[in-house]
Length: 140
Image (cartoon, rainbow, N blue to C red):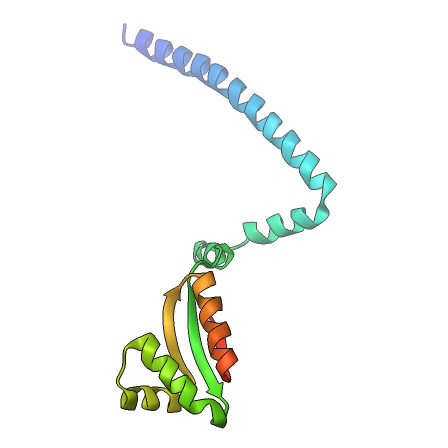
């Protein structure tokens, strides 16, 4: 009597395995066909995929971070022309809301981060303004 349930379980497992294996094989074949057609068309992509598949989890996370589109920019005051120093000090004073003395110290301490977390348009506008006054500015 105890042998019957064992036989029944094994039959159920065999039937389930047969039913489940077929859809997987169909999906796998379809996926493989798509992959092979794309890979055959572009060997450069195949090489990139091969390189990516060898990365560790941490390396993959770093790769994802590098591939993300940059949306926030930092504006860094690199240097300035000596003749433009008063104009740049006034502009920094207006931008940062510092006192005249603090603005002078800030400008003289270049290279220094001026603004952080700006959109590309804001950062480009600020860069253009400062470069027009005689400063050298870098976007990061």
